[in-house]
Amino acid sequence: MASVMSVALSRAIRGSAGRFLAVGLLSFATDAGLLFVFHGVFGIWLPLATAMAFIGAFVANFGLNRAWAFRSDGAVGRQLWRYLALVLANLIATITLVSAFTALGLPYLVAKAASTATLVTINYAASRKWIFL
Image (cartoon, rainbow, N blue to C red; front, side, top):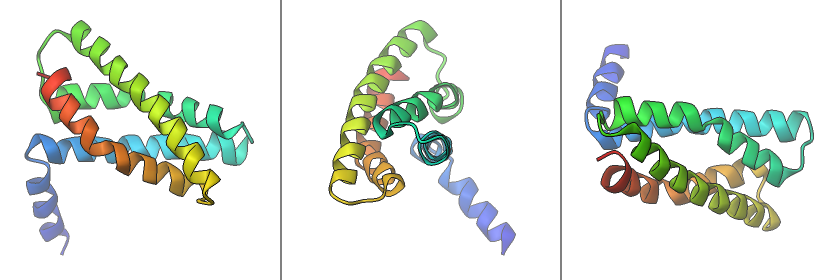
């Protein structure tokens, strides 16, 4: 059973889309974990905690996407500036969506998952076609 799962996982992450999703899952776990710590444990105001957690997942996400998901060897400076622009747009969208979804009655971690699911396709397209050329 474990070898079947290993083969399936290996096949899934062969292409950039699969690797992008794997990096995204790791980043989401980091982001959601930090959000839980900042808001759930320390009681930091939800929009600020959301922003802090989102920014906290940035470094690993950029590095893994550049080196592994897209296997890019382009100019890191240009990629970083474009990635920062995407991150800023995502930060604004994430804060807005998490706040909106919680206002609709969703628990904050569910709201975080919903906002991430909303943005993932846009982020893949921007990463593949604009950032990690």
